[in-house]
Structure formats: C-alpha cells, structure tokens
Length: 111
Image (cartoon, rainbow, N blue to C red; front, top):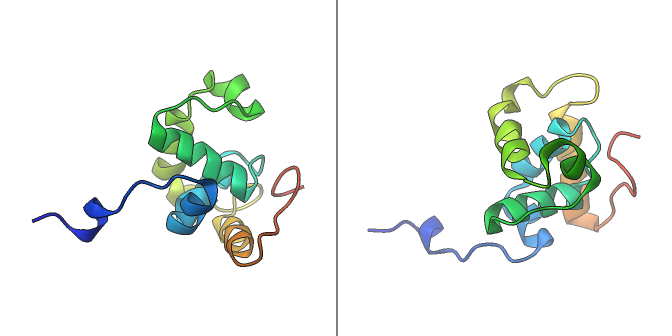
C-alpha cells in the first residue's frame, strides 16, 4: 500500500519547496558556500524536481545550468556542512526565517 508521502503532489512553487524541504534547501545554501539565498536554493531544488535547467549564475558557470550535481552534492556532503561559509545551522536559521517572515538576504546568504 502506498504511503502518504507517495500520494502528495509534487511541489509547484519555491515557497512549497522551502516549506517541504527546509533542510535540503539549507544544505544547498551550504554547498553554494553562501551564494544561494533560501528562495534561490528552493528554486534550484524545484528545477531538480521538475528535471529542468536552472539559469542562476552559480549553476550556469559551474554546472552548465544542470541542478542535478549540486543538489546531489548538497545531500551527499550534508554531514560536512560546518564552519566558515558552510555552516548548516546558520543556513537552516535563514531558511526558517524566510518561511516564517518571508524575509531573506537580497544577494547572498553569508555576505
């Protein structure tokens, strides 16, 4: 019998992604070394879910607009996201703040 998570429709907006996958979004921020804001990380994850390209500067210059590798790396490296430019606790706090208030950094998460 399918579980409830299999019956949930896929997210359709960045705010849906941010609320449903806050930890993955935080790890994408860490993987980008703070380049991504919470909404940008959610947008990248949504492109990954929809199997679409993403045209942010980071993905364009490093991954040929393909979100697969950075999302997989964010998940794969999640246990090492600590310290300068990659602290997951700080990234998760930014994500939670964006969910709660709608406010987030304008250009990048750490700067």
